[in-house]
Picture (tube, rainbow, N blue to C red):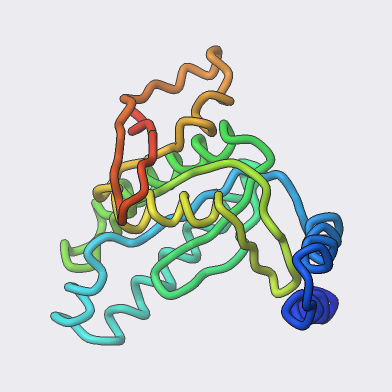
Length: 199
């Protein structure tokens, strides 16, 4: 983690007044805050497969997911922030690029699956949101859009599904031709309006 980021977090925790903490928080956002479209991809059914086939099977699938995902995300102008277990976290300048990458990822895995036995097939679920995040060295990022995209991609979306938060979907240009069905989702006591993208 970035040392300056750590120092400011400690300064925040040590501050005795709310006004002082708000001042430190403002400095954190000024230095590390960016506005991004956030994509979180999760490999579906992974725990079940790992229990059934073991750790080597797990690592083989994770490696193939990473090797396929990174160039596709970069092709659409995105940045892989990190791979974490069977998840991929990425950032884009615009939601349209995140959605286009998500569609390309699903199509790529569907094509690759034609050449593997079923237990080695990779299916992914993807969540996308947009907003302000703290982007720090490592790299890593934090913020509400990361939480929403994670909830959509990891907990709610079905295999092969792309869920895009309503604010992110509304920023996609009409001429892009991206279609989706609006859903009102309730998860862990949180209401999320999101579109299930058709492709």
